[in-house]
Image 1 (cartoon, rainbow, N blue to C red):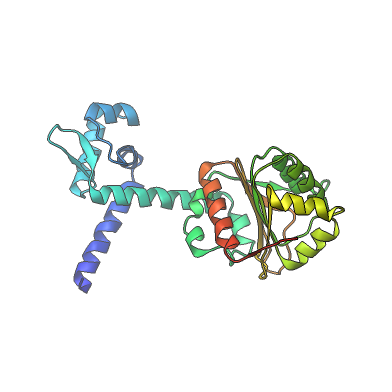
Image 2: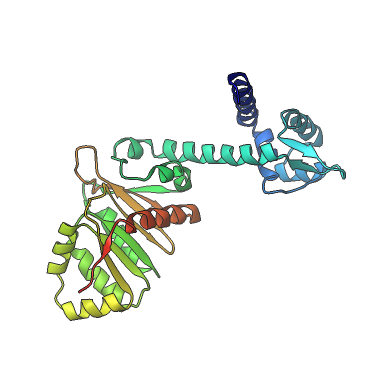
Amino acid sequence: MNETESKIENTEVEQILRLLSCSDLRNNLAQTLRNGKKMTLSELSEHVGASSPACVHALRELTKEHVTRQDEKRNYLLTNIGEIVTRKFKEINATITALSQHREFWLDHDLSDIPQRLLDKVGYLADSEIISSTATDLFSVFNAFFMLLENSKEIRGISPIFIGDMTTLFNKLVSKNIDPIELIFTPDVLDATLKTVADRKELANALKKNLKIFKIEKQPNFAATVTDYFFFIGFFKPDGQFDWSNGLLSYSPDALEWGQELFAYYVEKTEPVIL
C-alpha cells in the first residue's frame, strides 16, 4: 500500500466514524444490524423508534459510505466494512464511558502493571461503580468486599497486600466448599498469611481439595478479585502507597471476562504453593 492509498483509506474510515458519531439515528441503525442481521425498513424504523423517511435518509448516507447495503429482497444489512467499523465504534464508546465516568480513579492510580491488551479493552469495565471509604468508616470498602465474597461460588484473587481478617474469611469460605478458590500472593503476603494459620494440616488438606495458592515474585501494583458474579480491583497510587479508600466494582459479564483474563495473565507468572 502506497502513501496515497493509505491516506485515502484513513480518510474513509474517519468519514465513517464521523458519520456514526454525529448522528444517534445512524449509529442506532448500524448497531441494530450488527452480527449479520437483516431487516426491512419498517422493522428498522420500529426498532430504532424513528419515522421511515428519517431512516431512509440515514440509510442512504450509510450506504454511500459502504456501511450498509440492501440484498435482493430489499432487506438492509451491514457490509463487511460496516460490521468491522460498528464493532470498533461500540468499543470506542465503551472505553470513553469507562474512563470518563470514573475519571479521577483512572487518573490517580498506577496502571502500569495492567497488560496492554486489557487496557485496550478497558471499555469492558464501563458498567461499574466506585466504592469509597468515608472519614467515619475507613474500612467500608473492604467490609463491602468481604460481604460480596461470602456469597461467591468461585473466587480468584491477586493480592499484594496483607489483611489480617482475610485469613479468617478464607478459612470460612474453604469450609463452605467453594470451588475453586485460587489466590495469588507475593512472598511477603504469603509469609504473613501462613503465620496466621493455626492448623497447617487443615490448610494442606484444603490445598488438595478446593484451595489453590500461588506465589508471584514481582509485586503487581493492584489487588483484584473476580468471582462468579462480581469483579473488584483496587490500585496503588503513583507514590507506591496502596489506595485503601477506593475500589472499582462491577457485576457485568464483560467485567467478569476482563477480570478472568487478568487473573489468567498473572497466574502464568506464578508457582504453586505446596505444603
